[in-house]
Length: 611
Image (cartoon, rainbow, N blue to C red; front, side):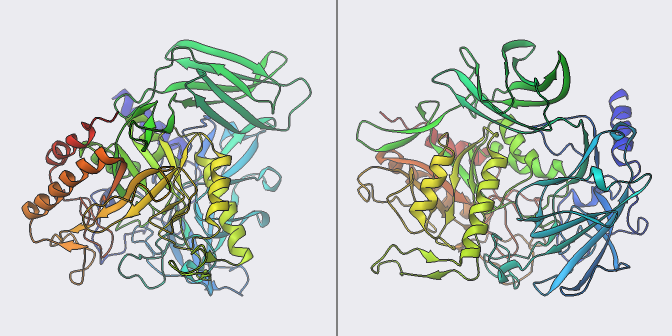
């Protein structure tokens, strides 16, 4: 009872003072399948969890809920009224938004809501945070423009202190998103969904929240483990510092202090972590981290975080084949292609419980890795992977309508595409932001800048930049794309059965992986996005024949591992829209093959010994 009371008290605190859209007349748009969590969505308490687990403060407030919205021609000014209510943080095209409308490149999506500050925010600087908004965003507080942001996959924030007034605050947001009619990264979104391309996602699709901070506050920090030196390097970015301020960083192993150091703000430090407990899928140990700004012996600001001691690297085996290593040991990495789409929320899971459900099921199926495919998830997803021990390969979302081949594969030249200067700058900027925002999550072990030549450009330059920017991880330059002698990994896609890239292609300089295979389809009646014209790379009529083929593909992988294969990715975790090649249905209501049966089949992959 006590826990329930505390939960309800926190809920009242988080949402008190938010003036939602026009009452509580929200309902999910009918017509498509939905997940079990959709019916539990409460517009007065939606995605209520603290959204930034790598940098926790207590003085915050959630702004999710019913807001007003309007969709107007792009060249019209800010609307005076509204067209209806939208449930934030669900994209306007989604069923859970309560709207279910397409916006398009010629229109602008406008939001409006009101909120009040908590007592704890009075006298503080107030930061307004957006988890993700797709794509170009302008933000107004009490009629004053407080900032703009381009990017559909990275969090951003504005200090809105100077725009605040007494009493109720008005927040307005405009979003323009050209989907597949623009130069920006957009993943699998297209204006006309078909095949492997899905419904557009426009506008706010992750949590919106405010936070009260001191005038001098910790804005960000970067941490990188080194198990060889038994250290954790930390660099802290703080705002509005005064002379004499110091940064204190404390590493904790449970209640025991592993190390504590003081440093001048902006200077790096290396915490000692002796005899480190190494993070791995079978033992995902996390240390606690406390970061403070100290002035004259008193703590001015403090955030709570965590870290893990783990290492991802590669090294030749006895036969000269490069092997991917975790903590200096070969671990065959095997996981599903995970696109992170939902029939009711599109990019946004109905709840945190739904979001983590997919990770739990993946673990139960006996996978130790997830390839997060051309999408970025909310921070709580990566935090959960950290907690349960799930390796993650992180793709850069692809896109760019204007990219053109400069040389076709097989012809003279590098086979890359040519992008406009605007498109190149957008890609570079957002890729850097994504890497910065996700750097501190130890579960991420591989960066993937390009997928299947979708807008692939200047591969060597982009890959080398990625490797130099984060030398603590491996870089898979082009998963299934145009192969270049750059990056740590050579990645083949092959459907439906497994195959292995030629080990001699680049003189055994790269680790060999099978970045996609499988795609075995099984449509389940009453659990498909549409009744007809669904597809998989091979389609089966029942689960038994599906599993027989799936298991035969597992058997084929074993000799490939012996010959040098370091990892494989099966397509895919769930069905997505008209694709029915998931291990689960799109609504997550049916496991096509029992988890225990899959896990037993996968065990032989991890048992292969490599010298």
